[in-house]
Length: 74
Image (cartoon, rainbow, N blue to C red; front, side, top):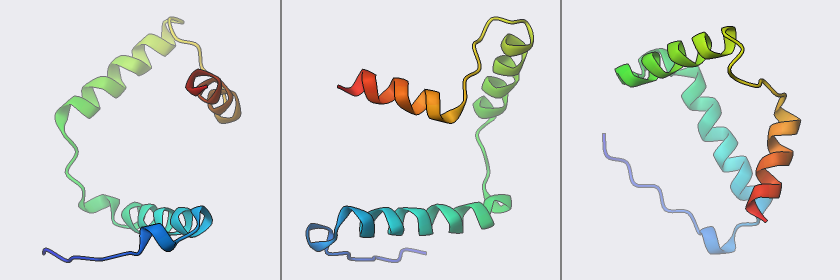
């Protein structure tokens, strides 16, 4: 299916744009059983889990991660 949706992005506020993004992600989440994930995703997640279990990775909460990413972007 090739559906074209035209949004007046230059006329939308950031809040309106974020609402659209959230709506799309929610829809994707509710249809996630239809997604065919590439094999490298499973491999990466397995390797990451092993690395975490071995104590080679630092696990931080979302708020801390967001803080670090925002500092890095500045």
